[in-house]
Length: 276
Image (cartoon, rainbow, N blue to C red; front, side, top):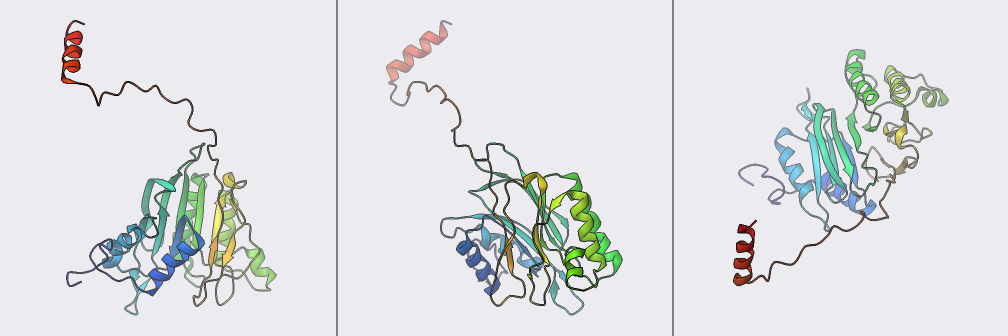
């Protein structure tokens, strides 16, 4: 529209092909929470993106936390991360940006989880392997510290790194980013359950779901959905929560129905109360 991107919910803006493909993938695969990295979202587009996600589709609405990308030297937008989740599956406890353009965090309570154990998901787009060591450390120091502090933390996204043993199995030299990946896994007790399967068009397993070992018995192995035409494949996992199958205990006592109370009955009630 002439006055800008609007709020997305009103559908005055048209989502691009990537947005349509992503929403189509979510519907097709019945995902409940999604971490999208390297979104390259412009600052001016943030509210429109959030609005499009919150607009019902097939009876489902979503909430989101978005950190837009940042301008690059080539006059384009780089980086950017978004997490979206179904409002009928989760109650959001907290959502915030950790590192602008690189990392966002959401803490969610699963509706129907009898243990009421929230999960915290860090959506990350980490520096590329060839970045300067200081740039790599700046991002990896943050996520390692946060994951150590939260035993229910999940680290999800394009980490641009993989275990050193996986790299060496391909007869290649691990990078400094790969070493930081190993440190994160060990220090934060995260579960890496893959085997070096390619998730990127140029080879390498750069996209990960690193679940807390606290959830080890309720999270499936990471799976790959090949997303044709994209340079990254989609990785996903199934999470089984402790569902309440017993109900919510005894029903509370129900008082008399007062909807049909007549004026005369109300008058007698007020007179009786006045004598107390």
